[in-house]
Length: 309
Image (cartoon, rainbow, N blue to C red; front, side):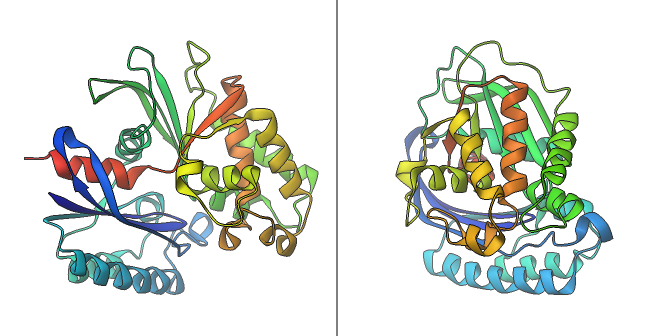
């Protein structure tokens, strides 16, 4: 069966069209990611701007054309933090219904966390006898999940969503370019405060970090001129090396940051806040490294579509 999953995030809209095999295994046919910054200004205004909606609408039109060409049997569209928090989403809901023939499902924070975990562990060598931690740094929120995968089925012990994300904290705290040390300390303190109730990890297995912040930081650490999903997916990045990457990016202005090998230019303005978020959760766990997954909510959603009656 062929399925299509669209994740309308605060910063990025993502498309996955995949074929399902035996036991729910997925093979990607097409993957696309477009930074539309739907959540631009939402932290302040609590409303989706007309420009952000227009950018996202244009992206979804392109995705819809590709979905029609590939003829999936099932399609699902979800919205995350920006659509949870903001008013003004009716136009986008109508756009989704018209383009894809389905209603957009606005995920709760816990639903987003569970789908992120389900998608993140796919294709990774995860020991089903031990708990695995996954964190998903989005533009508006960060999801943290602890659970295990038993015979291919995710068993969740803890799942929570926190209103700290790369776009939200950049807009809230950064007014200088590059951000000042005081601004970086404020973001770190905000992130640490948010994650205070996250359970500690019982063993030393590297937690899994997903979404654009983590894949971009991994690509920068690897010095990739062009993004290489197979190299990034499963890569283990020492926390000390990650800290060095974040410090290096924080030390230069936006234009120089855009030119760093591995950097997605449209993500360069929010990558420092995203990196500080990652370090805050890893320091909370005293984790010596993080395992990178380039999968996430869209993969969890596709698997859900494939396995649903």
